[in-house]
Image (cartoon, rainbow, N blue to C red; front, side):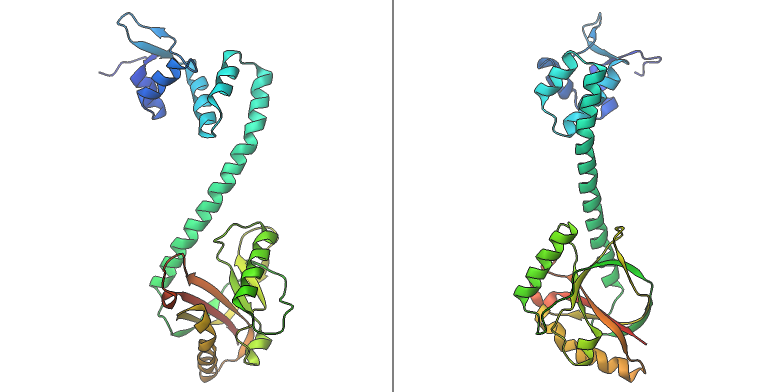
Length: 269
């Protein structure tokens, strides 16, 4: 039966408004955190419209793990001053939660876009694509002149994460310089990079890029550069900029290194 012109709510009706079980209201009543406004003539507990805001505040604060004893202390003698202080203290917590959710959203969106990208690619095939400019953050240039070892890359990765404040997995890629490529040095990382929309981002130039999706371990990536360069020359192009390596399928997706997939984007003219 639907009751019209409600001014009071029975326990089940009140619980339904907030999408909770009646047991939650029974528990709050038992511990004297939030109690019914009264008991009707037929013996049912009821709540009033005036209690809606109070309960919404309790549920919001509990979602932030606000201690029940602190809630009981506040609601036993509420005041404007105490409410303002309470709001200011927990606004910071809400902002932190929003930041966490934004990071999770970005991470899941990145995984989705990678999956869609891989569906529409052919592994081992070189394509020439006009790319738009992209916002990226770069690490400091690599001061070492020799090949970049796994230990060195991992060290640079950790430093980069610390400098940017990012939390892994951050989908950080590697840049191989035009100079190293032209001299056949394919195993030296010039710097690291990551796609971003933060205010301090730089622009990765728009233009023509030779794209190759390579399936294989990290160690095998350098072996495909000669093939990539031959394809570029055979099609009448030449290297005009750096190469960007993005590790689309890695240990997050598979335990088999031979199933890793790396996207190499090399600037050409």
